[in-house]
Image 1: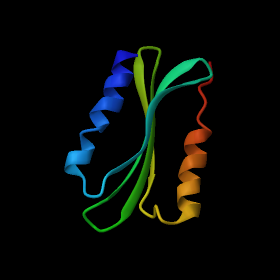
Image 2: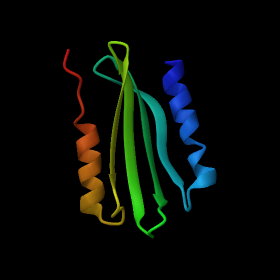
Image 3: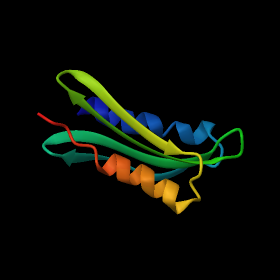
Image 4: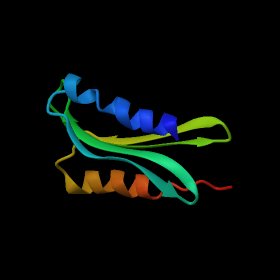
Length: 94
């Protein structure tokens, strides 16, 4: 749990380095009995794309599982919706 909290905290450092960084959400959530770090933000990259990013992280049998999904077309609600749908569908099978 401490590692997951640190992961959420470490992503806060992006704000100082990435142009137009904006937190949307960063928190610890429980899904199907597992604790996950859920991170969601947007920023502009060096090529001028507005990027929307979501990440889920948890430990599975002692190994870190990081799932990242992003779109370079954050202004497109269909693209953003696809990223959200993908992340929201993540389930661990025991």
